Image (cartoon, rainbow, N blue to C red):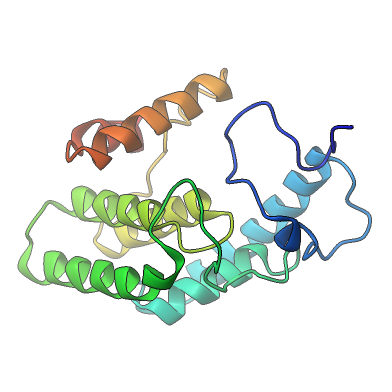
Length: 196
């Protein structure tokens, strides 16, 4: 029998292991829309927390704390790197190394103006989602971090395809397509999507 909380017809979220599913905190959540609402409330609070602080965005501890604040009222594993394999991302034992390399690269890009500010933020966001460091919420984290970094670099936050809110499924498909292009070293579609 399908589980109305975790079974999905689309690929909107990375599937969780049975052990990760057991880490759900609110006992009232039984349906997907309840989970989405609880996560969205938590994400809003995390965004307000991040906006109120002038912290170094390019820091592993900050990124873990931000993820914890985004999902910590919903999932016990929030802010902790995943320990299991996924169909996306690097091997679990390589996460810390890849995260530090990505941060070091982004620091270099900023310090040397290697790319324009928007491109630095989008490249950093893409690298985070490609690593897929946490059990879930990686795309949402990477987009929020992209916004924070863009603002830090004097730019407006990105719209991430949300100028047209009519068809969320189409927007998600465009995002996935742009991520795949970036995976193949063509960052242009993701840059265009981020400002669309």
